[in-house]
Image 1 (cartoon, protein in one colour):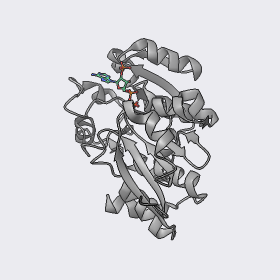
Image 2: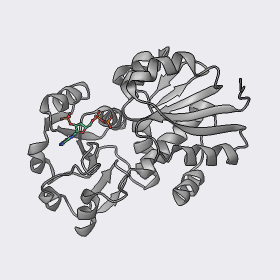
Image 3: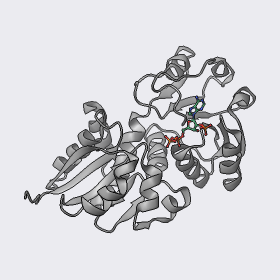
Length: 271
Ligand code: ATR
């Protein structure tokens, strides 16, 4: 039997082979002289309970990041949840030493905006999507005092998320109604990934010239939404920076160290 002595951290999800997380965390472990290794583990929903109960201790796993499609099932199976992940039933960071689940997605997006000089307080923000990532982002936006509209293909989900956060919830089909006075547009749907995409981008033409478009998708690096936004001369950003920034918070949960903006810049250069 092989006994692993180094602390092991990893990302679980499916598909996982193109994950950028090993590059991010292995950079940080080296930078902060932490004797640990970070790996990507391909895992679908059906093996999650067995993995959490039987593999964590023998593999010396100290922490796990959780990606699609496991955020909800890990939340349901974690020993403990912090307040926000319990509220959202979504875990993207599992501290295996205490068994506690956390969600850092929304905080990552807010830090990314902050690093780009964008303060959301009082800003009119339109969020497309009402899934796990959207809910985490909407909650943080609400905490910072943004004025939000949440739009989703399934309107009821947008209305439900909006109700909790005193925000308007509506159908994504009505997007043009909300573009005229939107400061920040954030795509939290899966549109732009895996061949799925919006059919019509004319809503971008209604945005004010100083609006900012954030697409949390990072594969492909430039979705058609970003391409069209840039064609219109709008400032725009893909999801790679949010991915890095949510990892900075997860690293703090694992090690107690909050990496710096310089670390974020250095990681951006290697991804
Ligand atoms: P994540 O955890 O990444 O947020 P999710 O919870 O599965 O993933 O959410 C996916 C989001 O993309 C949802 O808002 C979903 O809309 P529905 O609630 O109506 O399913 C949205 N989405 C997925 N496919 C879409 C499509 N073809 N058109 C518009 N929105 C879509």
